[in-house]
Length: 616
Ligand code: ADP
Ligand code: MG
Image (cartoon, rainbow, N blue to C red):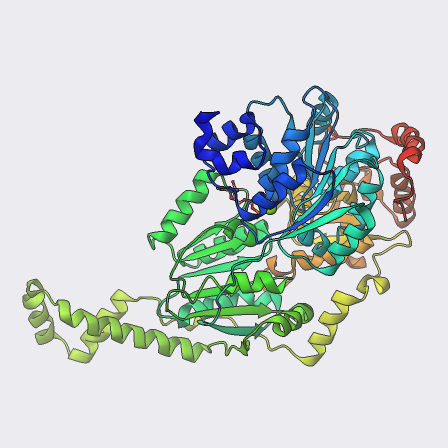
């Protein structure tokens, strides 16, 4: 084993030669703290583990390496389940595990919403030993009987805090209740809020907590501000912030990949040097964008927390929280990226009425004050631009070139000097002083705030006219075929952005200019708020369908189509079938439609065996 001397520290943790070889290929030389603690613990005693360490500290390998060592290569059943909050993370974790398995013939797959059931089903049938999945899709497979979790050696909740944050507790509990008792449970998380410990108490037998204290993030050089605004005004406020600064070299943090792309694109269209950085980019694309940023070829990265992790770009002048993080630690992390190496930085957090609670929480935990930010007025911006023009002209005075002497005196002899200067400025900055670049920003009134709060914390869909008694809400989507939408694309978009399940989306209709979709009412709020800022002209992209829109639908659409006839009672009937397990996808294609009525009945009985005391 001399050939792995370089990996001495890993070897000392008890890892096998096969693993060391994989680590060498991967270029890991030293274990991280969480790996140093967790690997021997998991290889050794038969305990459950709750592991906490900062993002980017290699938690995946901390659980994946021991799992890989412990799996039975010969046994094709699913021996490890890793639950991850998003499709991006699931893919990332599956890739990391695959690259760590080395020469072992162990199958690892990511199972997530938005990709074909058929393909996943085929793979599952062949036997996937390590399944990495999002809770929604895993539950779908459990319901269809296409996944058996009763031979697990390990069940892992990765990014557990994020999963709880996204409201997956019930899903997780349901999934765990269908697994065998004698597995080991592992929770990994960047933070350790109480609900995770509560979950540990509920699902773990004997367990150990491994906490790695993080290096403190220094935010003392960061000036912190917030802007209370409406979702629909965020873009305007962002562009005003950028325009008011003589230097803007920043990360704009968003919540979702879709949002990142949208904002990156919008900024680009407005002429700002911005790029979106998210988990769907290949490693190569990601590197290219980061290099452009380091070379100052672009000055704005629009990123999700996940995509931004591990990237080290110094000298950022600003961090913009386009969407507020749910977790104060994430906030500190984000803003700690500016205000480094003796330079001050500015962090500005956008807060919509519905995010007031989150913001209050951050303010309470945060060590320094977060001051209100005064959004520059159009007059401010024009003045700032004029000042910058004057500065630019002044600094050019040091670099004057004699080659321009003749033409300068010719022009001066032909024109009044003030007209001449004006003409030159206009030539150089033809659109800079246009007021039309800016839109009005509506002030947030008290009433608006109340409404926002209600939307977030009550159940606003109760008095909604498009909700029928079975708890289905019809949503209106302000895009249609002319935006190149298809049913499939629309469904994938929603599944991706909102982490809902395939089966949640029913009766999708894509019309010329807009679309409709039925969702369980308890998800309507989540979907509407996720797409809140994607609309145009201040109009939201997704709303609850109004009766008049439905009327229009009936008139315009082909009366022969099944979905069109979806009257109230028909929808109710369909919902009843849906409950039974027969799903109507209302999709363009039915290839991944597996009739599961009989399967589900059979399975229910079977499940009875495993649903022992863990069901509450
Ligand atoms: P976390 O889940 O804690 O946020 P990840 O497991 O995603 O972190 O790891 C972050 C990155 O660090 C990955 O690219 C991973 O390959 C890399 N990494 C993990 N452990 C090591 C190590 N011991 N040495 C070098 N790189 C590592
Ligand atoms: Mg992780």
